[in-house]
Image 1: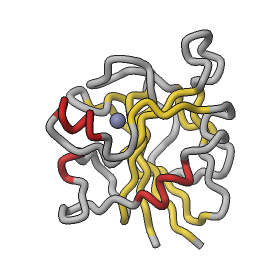
Image 2: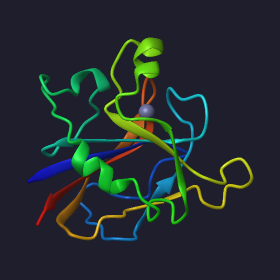
Image 3: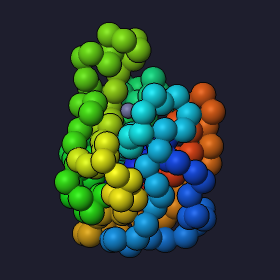
Amino acid sequence: MKYTVRYAHLESMSHLKVGDSLKFGDFIGIMGTSGQSKFNHLHIDLIYGFVRKIIRLREIGILKRYKPCKTQLDYFKDEDLFKFKLVITTQYMCKEYKKIYGKNHPAYDLVPKDRHRSKDHFKIYFNRKKVKNVEILFVGFDQIGYGFCVLIGYETL
Ligand SMILES: [Zn+2]
């Protein structure tokens, strides 16, 4: 099965190039607050299939064009992501988020646990091992939403 994972609100343009491949432990970019974001955090979401452009959260849903996969997304939520303990600041399908922004949040907002004390663990790494055909699908900037972001495609074994 093919999936696309998106890393959003990075501090700057990622050094990764579309078409490049990636492996476990490779550096993706630095957590930031670019685009529509009020504080440093990593927004990460995941859908079925390969997508090579910016899509909106409103387009992601079980009955929408782009289908989310929480099971796969959950694998990214571990300590290899920042190489440090992490904290979830906005949960998957957070009810409070929906109240405030009027849309669903099929995503996690994550930060390293020591974010207020130092920026030492703001670096984001690719943390999947048992996957194949990992490919950079999109690297760009989205002013009205995700800021500097990276889309990575992969297939499960
Ligand atoms: Zn988010």
